[in-house]
Length: 179
Ligand code: 5GP
Image (cartoon, rainbow, N blue to C red; front, side, top):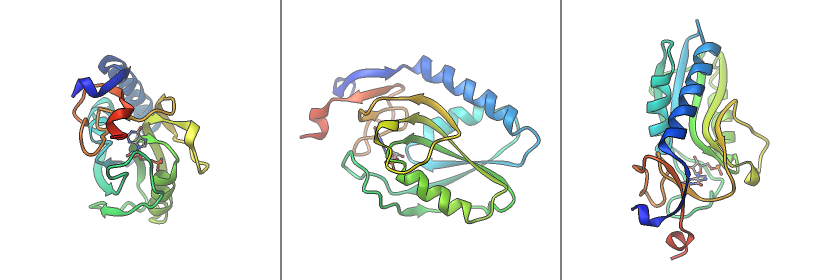
């Protein structure tokens, strides 16, 4: 699996350090509030597991699964909900936990969709931000790392459902997806 990686962009230790910083900030910002962390499956699974353990205030967790790239590396902009939240979010403080913001189309859809359910507040935390390819004006409230316009895998991020279990974030060799 590692032989398909051109370069490690973020090591396990760098991710751990940054996730704990994000957890500390979120703990401060949401102290005393009814917080629901909403994990966007599947890519944010690992980030969600580590981030929520770095948050030191009570919170609820929920999950939403949406369609992503399939086997390609470019988003279609068409977002489909595959699995919706278990619970209602009206009057609660919602934090969307996302793996990466690229064009921003997925997040825009999620913000519009969840925003229409009348939450007390709606914010976004993303592990990675690729601002070079943004197609809509949207920016995460909390961001782990700004990264260059490369296709990355690992720590939850996949190509064709593989590489999610790499403990680091790496740049996939282009010949893997150009095959
Ligand atoms: P957007 O709608 O912002 O273009 O795309 C967001 C989604 O596309 C992310 O949640 C993620 O699933 C996928 N994505 C965007 N860039 C990458 C990348 O570099 N690597 C992987 N594996 N997925 C990506």
